[in-house]
Length: 185
Length: 109
Image (cartoon, rainbow over all chains, first blue to last red; front, side, top):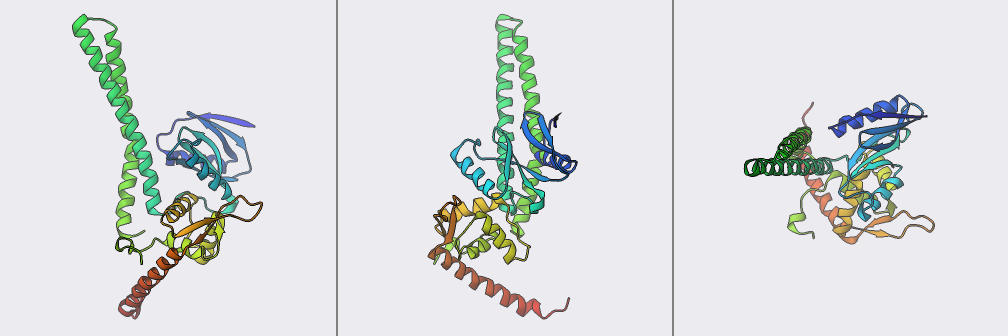
């Protein structure tokens, strides 16, 4: 049986934890699209889930070579969303982590940080441009539509701030891991 | 000998991957082998292993060889350069152990 759950996560590690809690209850994620999780029944704790952000979209040759490698290692890619991939491995095959040393963990977190930063700046720039266009129009031709631009711009700036907030736990993680990396591997 | 900039310590993952590849094997076998060699202490994640394999291939410390017939998995083995790196690392580790034992080894807990 299929179960659909709609949920929004800002922190992929919390999302990962939630997927594993669902798996423990016998609900195995089988597909994901924006904020929509589809679960199918499985035996309790059959799979361990991990989420990863790839360097390229999954159809890129480099990503495909990587996904093939994962598959050979018993890791199944359940679903993908832009560059995010949802992976699972049978829990009976032991612990499942994608990155096990500090350096590769830092690299992965940095990839995510760059993504949130780019989205944030995009929202800020487009938002600011909208506000400027709106204000200029308002003062030159007192066009009432320009108010829409100002409101839209404001909303985009707010959205940018949301992504700034989403990056906070990632930046904290990177800092902590880098500090650790100074004294050990 | 490796360039001076490359004389630093190898990571644990790289050291064990190189050791494993004295016998040709594919990715999954490397993971198993590293786990066995370290008595379960070192478990390589697939992403970490994949990144390390690609870097080692680029550095020419290992090379890819055609797997067995019927198997499409790629196998890898250590190169002469890789073996030189391991020898260099062994000398470094021996120095660490000798100094460690000499200075801290006699102390009771």
